[in-house]
Amino acid sequence: MIIKLKTTFQDKRGEILDIFVKSPKDHCSIVTFNKGAIRGNHYHRKSDQFTFVINGKLLLSSQKIKKNGKLIGKKKEEILTKNCLVIHKKFHVHAFKALEKSCILAFVNGSRGGKNYDKDTWRLKPPLLK
Image (cartoon, rainbow, N blue to C red; front, side):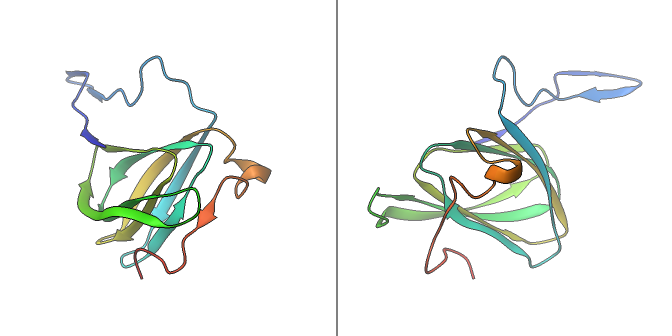
């Protein structure tokens, strides 16, 4: 699901944009992309991931996957721009390709940070995006 967030408050000082309300996360990372970079090509079995685009332009490719690792349904591709919030549910493969230099915040409910970075990361072979 992709949500284009709107400004919560604005005055002469600038603006405030609420990414989450009443929804604490277990981990948050800043991820940068150089133009043409591909990231992701994985899914999570226990965690939901949230991607917030700070700036840039990304191609998102996503598809559902069964517990046995077989892709199901139709692959979706969408363009993400500044202030888009994407919710990646469990067993949804996600991959990004930077159409220009970009930056995201990646939030996770579940083990995904620090030493646990790869504990709930299942890489897709072959990848959705190459």
